[in-house]
Length: 182
Image (cartoon, rainbow, N blue to C red; front, side, top):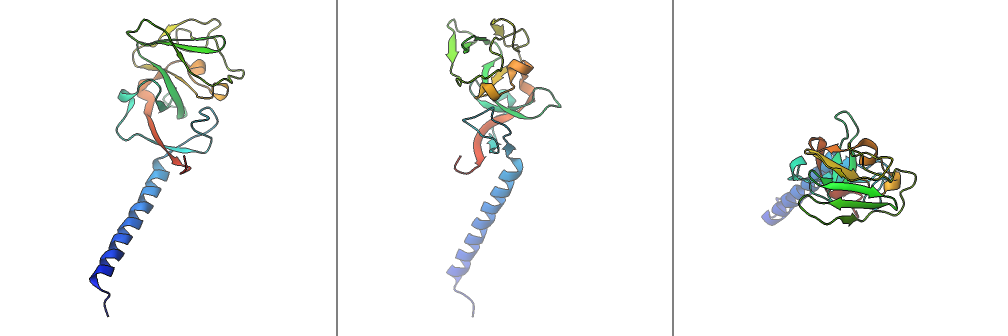
């Protein structure tokens, strides 16, 4: 004897929903970017997996975005926070104090950062955006970004590698895929 139509419909709907959940989980696991190291603590921890925004690419990067970027075409993909974009001036004074003069503005802003910088360079920036012997402001060139880790004491970022090329940005971080409690 055949089950009533409504049970078949409910079974089909449940099957479709389970399939969608499984497919979504598999796709998220495959396309999620793994976080390696502690440079982005407390926002992201070692072992987290993040999804990149599906509608924002290298041309859509803004100050304070967290991006997945490479410092060289063949370099590792890393997560860093965008402090300055092309046309901005940036400097890091002893203290450390990160200062930003956005393009078109006349007043320097202080960018909040973590307190522990460890033994990483503080004085910045040289003409290439990397750490320098003495603090000086540097103009971020066209097509470049100045990026820092949220945990500067554990981060190799623009202080070590200089400007990050905008065209080497793979995407803007959208959300945490794992762990689910994010």
